[in-house]
Length: 124
Image (cartoon, rainbow, N blue to C red; front, side):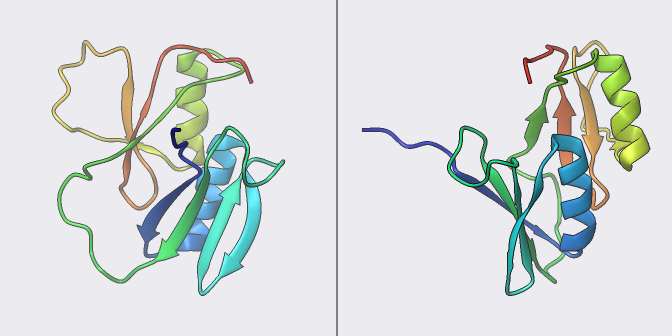
C-alpha cells in the first residue's frame, strides 16, 4: 500500500490573492471555502491525479527559505513564453543562490513563496 499527495496547504496572509494567482498559474478553480481558507484545484475537483491547494490564512510571519517549494512545468508553450506569462500574473524573480546556469527559473509568488519553472514541457 502507498500514499498519494492529495492536498498541499500553504499558510498565507491573503488567501484571496494567492488563490487567484495559483488558479491562474495552474488552470485551477475554486473548490471551496472554510474558516477563511480557500481550496483550489483542477476543474474535475478533489481526488484526481493533481493535488488541490488549500490557502490557509495565517498571521505568523514567514522567516527564511521554505523547506518545501512547488515546481511547475509549461504545458502549452515553451519555458520562455511561460516565464513571461507567470511574470505578467505577478510572479517575480527570486534569488536563492542559483548560478545562472540552471535549466529552471526561481520565482516567487505575490507573498514571496519560492517556486521553480522547469524547462520540460508536459502534456496538458
